[in-house]
Every structure is written in C-alpha cells, then in structure tokens.
Amino acid sequence: MAGDQKVIVGIPKETAEHEQRVALVPETVSKLVDKGLDVWIQSDAGLASNYLDETYEESGATICSDRDQLLSESDILISIQTPAEEDLMKMKSGSVLICFLWALQNEKTVELLKEQNITALGMDAIPRISRAQSMDALSSMSSISGYKAALIGANELDRYLPMMMTAAGTIAPAKVLVLGAGVAGLQSIATAKRLGAVVEAFDIRPAVKEQVESLGASFVEVPDLDDDSETEGGYAKEQAEDKQERQRQVIHEHAKKSDIIITTALIPGKPAPLLVTKEMVQDMHPGAVIVDLAAEQGGNCELTEAGETKLVNEVKVMGPLNVPSMLAYHASQLYSKNMLSLLNHLLKDGDPQFDFEDEITLKTTITHQGEIISPMLKDN
Image (cartoon, rainbow, N blue to C red):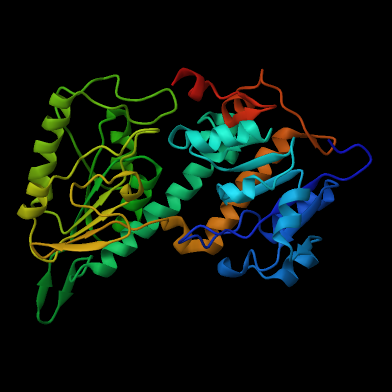
C-alpha cells in the first residue's frame, strides 16, 4: 500500500450521539509516528475526552481541519464507532477501517464496505484468546462500564452503601445484586464491595463462581443448569426457555431483598436475555435502583428504556447508553492501547498485511477486497 510513501493513519472526530471518546491518544500517536506512519487527526477530535490538538502536534500528528480530506486520503481509518454511511462513501478503495462494527447487527453497513472495497476490522470481533488479550477492546470497555455502573447505582440510591455505626444507631450495608459475571459484572462486584455493600452475583456459567467469590461476593446458584453454558469465546450461551424461567424464579427471590441491581448479560449477535421481569420490579422496595448495562441491546430488565430513567412503583429503572464514554479520558487511553496492539500485529514494514491463516486476523477482519472474510458472518 505504501510504496515510497508513508501510510496515512486517520483519526476522525466521533459524530455519534453520546460519544466522547477518541480512537487514539497522543501517547499512542507518537509510537505510530516512530514506526514511520503518518498520523492525521481531525481538529478537536480529542477535545471531548480532554486530549488537545497541541498535545497531538507535540506527539507528531498532523492536525487536519478538513474531515473530507482526512476520510478520502487515509490508508487506515481508525475510529470508535462505525462512521456514518456518507463518511464511508468518501473513503478510498482499498483502504482499511478499524472500529466497533457489530457486523452481525449491521448487514447493510457490511454490504456497503464490500461495495466500496474497504477492508474492515471489527474491534468487537477480536477473538478472546490469550494472544489477543492486549487487543481486546470489548473487555477494556466492559471493565469501565462495570465500574461506572456501580457508581451510578450508588449515586441514585437514597441510602448508604457501607455499614455505618453512628451515635444515632447502626445502619446496615446496602445489598447489591449483579446479574452476569463477565468483565463488566466482575468490575461492578469489585467496585460495589470497595464501596462497602453486601454483594451477590448470578451467572449461568458455573465456572465463574470462583471468580465471584474471590471478590468477596456470594454466588447465586440455580440447580440443574446446563454444564455447556459457555461459548468458545467465553460468553454465556442462550438457555432453553424452561431453564431461563428457573433462573428468573431464583433471581426474583434475591431481587426482592436488593437495593441495587446491576445487569450486564449479553449474548453476541442476539438481543439481551430477559433476567428482570416487571413482576420482580414491582416486588422491589421503594427507592431501589436498577442499572441495566444491556440497554442498548434491548435490556436485561423488561421495563428498561434505552437512554431513559423510569420510575416504576418508586423503583428507578435506568438504561444508560455508551457508559464507557462517561469516563472518556481513560476509555480512550485503553482503546488506544488495544488499537496499537492490533496494529503491531497487522503492520509489517509499515504496511498492513492480512494473513488469514492467523486466527486473530481471520476473525477480526469482516471484509477484504470486496469479500466477506469473517467466519462469524459466513456461519450465520
């Protein structure tokens, strides 16, 4: 791609609603410049996450005020969210796009990328194998979401989280129930524990019990669930309806006693599983809070509305959107490090090379040279 000319890496300003992050931070830019790449960043692309143009310039980046020029001349375009259709149309044939693509849910975008002859890599498609851990942006962002969810719940609750012994009497600690013990759930557990709450956690994967208990939480067990409850990538598998109903019965009993419920359960490529029914919400005490991190995928709570906070029988049901963006400075920093690791994997002598014998490259690449590459899409 490069020949005698440097490869141009472009970072556009994010335009999606609620998006405050930037795809590369200055520290990462300087490392790419040291590798011989030419890094262009749209002016003020990092402003919302408190990375200023001057700092990018000091790191060796070129500040580009013309978005169309950046889109049309970049050899590798790096973003957080998938650029809008009109932006994709401006990218040059043969260029590379790396971002969160969510290809299974966005068939129209995948078709457009094929037609435009853009090689597209999905940061959400990086395989969960040990070699790819440093590239795993989903885990990085989920960790931030879990931390922030515990803070949101604590902030909205009208009670103390820790036990408080005062001259006026002793106040019992708040009870937090975390549904889903993946990366986000485990971080929610750890944060709620640090804040002094009594924490319980539920997950259909028995293998996570030890991790939950190691953080000081109690594991809520449902008898007779499938042993085969986990995908190859470590995600929870969708369960049969009778098993889901058994789970909900157990969750219902624990929900009644909970001050805060944090839900984090997602199934890749499918709507979020229903874990908290409206009947459970009705049985929670006034002032209780539900923070539904699965709101963007339909929600784990039956009453969740994405982007809204609803009061149902004096219970707050919250469906926050793009939670990682609420901690944009560190979220950008972590995403940038994930991106650098992926680029180090792809770049050979300053040029991206696509070896589809390699599992990381094969599973992360969605389209290449007008063809669908991703096994995930081919098998779907």
